Length: 243
Image (tube, rainbow, N blue to C red; front, side):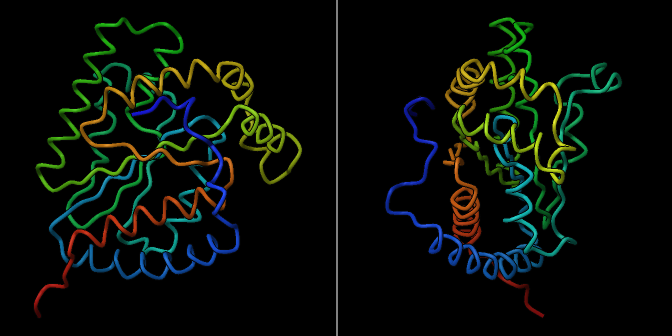
């Protein structure tokens, strides 16, 4: 896979905001029906992983793409800094209770990948442990898929300039200010370090492939994720059970 520095964060020139928004509305209708039959079919669970820089739009993606689906069949779990209790266990321990059962769609807002990214940025993860965690994640994701718990992974790719603009938004817009923390600015200063860490993860944790989403424009980000999710569910040949 090409390195992230060589992948644009902007939509392709032929993409237009109006058309993408119209298509998103169409995808919403399809996703509502697809999620219903996914739940009734009962053969699969689906784990959707959203990763990206601070301000890349993980919350926004969930709000604009997933909320068209029936909340009885969709759950969202956010993973923040590990608690003291979580740190007493292996780094995957805290995700086990949130792996979806058959019929359910589970969205991870951040995930076990944070337990590679953050230690890598902080230089607290040795090369051997980095490789071990990547190897283990590959095996876990393959294990899930072999048991019909499907995994769909997105990296929301934004530029450093766009990240800085969004941090300013958090400082100036009342409805976004609650999201701001001092760590936002610190993370922005380490943009290139994060990109390099994600390059390594996307390169090594790829037994289940990643979808890199051009996310500088929110309308294109939402359209792209919805399109991929819709097409993915359609390929499953889902059916309602015989009455």
